[in-house]
Amino acid sequence: MAEPIDFWFDFSSPYGYLLSERIDELAARFGRKVRWHPILLGIVFKATGSAPLTLQTPAKAAYSIKDFERSARFMGIPYRHPDKFPLATQAAARAYYWLHGQDCALARQFGHAVYRALFVDNRDISAPEVVLEIAANLGVDRSSLEAALHSPEMKERLKAEVDAALAGGVFGSPHVVIDGEAFFGADRLPQIEKWLESGGF
Amino acid sequence: MAEPIDFWFDFSSPYGYLLSERIDELAARFGRKVRWHPILLGIVFKATGSAPLTLQTPAKAAYSIKDFERSARFMGIPYRHPDKFPLATQAAARAYYWLHGQDCALARQFGHAVYRALFVDNRDISAPEVVLEIAANLGVDRSSLEAALHSPEMKERLKAEVDAALAGGVFGSPHVVIDGEAFFGADRLPQIEKWLESGGF
Image (cartoon, each protein chain N blue to C red):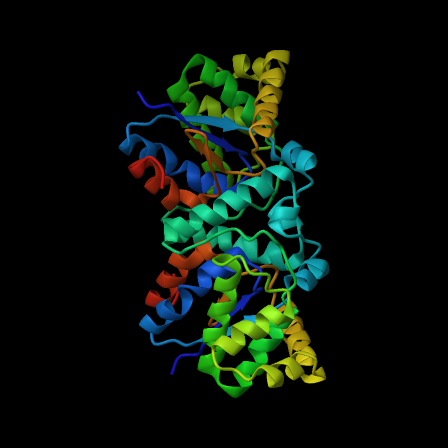
């Protein structure tokens, strides 16, 4: 069986959201699974000396917001740029890893729900209450998850994922790795498709 | 008649080169002309606080060079990453504008020849002699062009184009503007095509 594809992203990343809406289905067409790795872009940017697109120059910030929206329309994916942006995603990421330990299909549903809460419904996913509510709507036990968000294990797990991302050359979101080949950005989807089709090109 | 498309780029930009190999043909399919505007990314980056991809973090630099090559293969365009990179492009840009004043079709031929000299034949296009040689191979009078490279008019013209780029929100290369809508990056070609097809989406 072919190795799973690794998908590194931050829950606050617009292009990460766009890719999240397509990557599983695309991989499945080629008999591949995808491993989702939510990480914290703030730490990655600090380590690599970068910054969120909307906090760079005014021209780039203005263009980026238009491009998030236009790229979403181009891909046929709903998008509403959030009022609070960028924002912290520790709670969402820790919840993802904890849920994944319980039920990986449920974790995937939760991942989609978090992304859509932010980029469709304009929810403040940096608030742990919002993360708990999203999970509770999927039938997750709220108090177990709440305890997990503060547990040293989940803090360590997220830290380990961020460290692994940095060690693997991740410098932004989304970052996809297929059999050692890295693809950065939702706009690399056509190249990802060709790569899966041909086993490289 | 529809307005020409504006194509802003630096002759040292790999993605600018990739787009230059496709944009005229694509525009022509929709009855559009393209105005090429070589600019100096060094000045744009200084003004906007940015830097060339290969001079950012090691992970991003390594990825970028792989991505230039892979994107070229994906688009079916020859590419060999130049030994000298990035490099200064004043001479090439001034020569382009001077030639454009004489013969716009010849300027376009020259633009392609400069890009291919750098990204196919590994030539050092920062050297004025190389720029003069490329032009001479197209039948351009070498001494007239040499004089033009040092003329205050051509220095001013290039400066004016860079100022216009900055005023128009250009922050990198390639940057394409169609009827007021901006597209950044060679990977926006599919969106450019859809935009030309539909008059917006």
